[in-house]
Image 1 (spheres, rainbow, N blue to C red):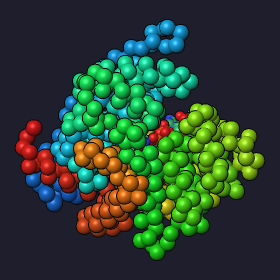
Image 2: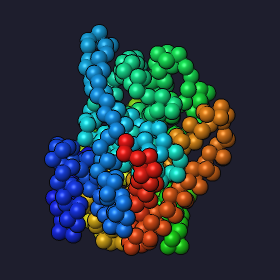
Image 3: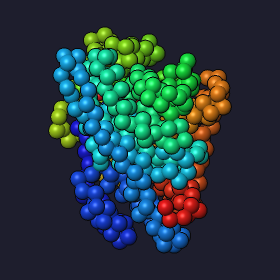
Length: 467
Ligand code: NDP
């Protein structure tokens, strides 16, 4: 799947002079980080109106402080592969903002990982965590390590080498990492084991832990379930439900799998899933039985989605075309789209295809999966568009619930955690609606999420002085 950054839209005529100047400075200071520029642009564009109404934030240079990470950690990760050869990767942790709580955000292991990508993710995380209403600051980390094709032992040795540096910088009250692309339950286990050995303490320093050693029920499901709850809330504003709706889902990882599961529970039909090699279109629908096949394929056998089309004859597999202008996954008749793979997987052309095909609900399970050109099209068309920092906040919210359970040394039931997750997603939705209206753009969830997330962090920064 090609990913796109459409830089030219940052300089569109309707952008205010303040945002243009702010972005010019940011780009000069942070060159070659297009995803970070994109994430900041989106927030700066939304909160301009807040800064106009509240000059005290501008005087305190709140936005300028928010785009500067509180701390950046980069380190060498050297490890031995199964042949005894030395491999060298780069490790990162971005401690972006701790105004409302300890840094919190996932670790990503993927060959595309670099400083700019992690800064965009850490920046988004600050606003997302604020929206959950839980006391969590924002951070993100990871490595350019590629888990694909590695043995279990290689994964373990890499995780141990990575943690042998990271452990100095994290802690239950300082910085609490979790999973993201390439980091699931297996990796969290190896990372936690090494942390515990080095520190000689058993604390809730990571979330996404196994159930019998401090994990929370529903944490694996939370991001996907939450994004579908968010879509259901958006639909309810138009008196509709997911029942009978045709849905396009991208990805086959953690978020995509549980997105499909919840859509099926709420009566929707899912016709696509993908991985980096291509996507399957199953006109008959991916039912529970077929989803179980996908989960086994991806979580146990670590296979490729192309195998789905070998198994189920109602499906067609289309391989990824590197360098293609658009992704054919987004060019099917449907009502809803749930991008759940990676950043910038929907570009302007894909957004146009979605709208042409009748899609009127987009709930982003992935972080920043839509380019700014695509976002503008969704907003102009007035569809129900839930940006990632609101729609996928269920994952980190449930990580917050895992932290609470760890602190209290007790475990809530599945129903209790799911109910809390559902309640949090409803409140995030309500905040987006309320903030969109209050600041003059009703129905605009992008502005609603950015402003809602911004205000809480900005007020905390004002209270805490110039630090
Ligand atoms: P996983 O590693 O479990 O799955 C990622 C999926 O996306 C895989 O199907 C993978 O295919 C595909 N993918 C990843 N990178 C690319 C790429 N460059 N091009 C094409 N396909 C790609 O990750 P998650 O499901 O956890 O994360 C998916 C998205 O959701 C990410 O944007 C993440 O930041 C976001 N997110 C995750 C949360 C969580 O709790 N896990 C919380 C909030 C957001 P392949 O296997 O072929 O690489």
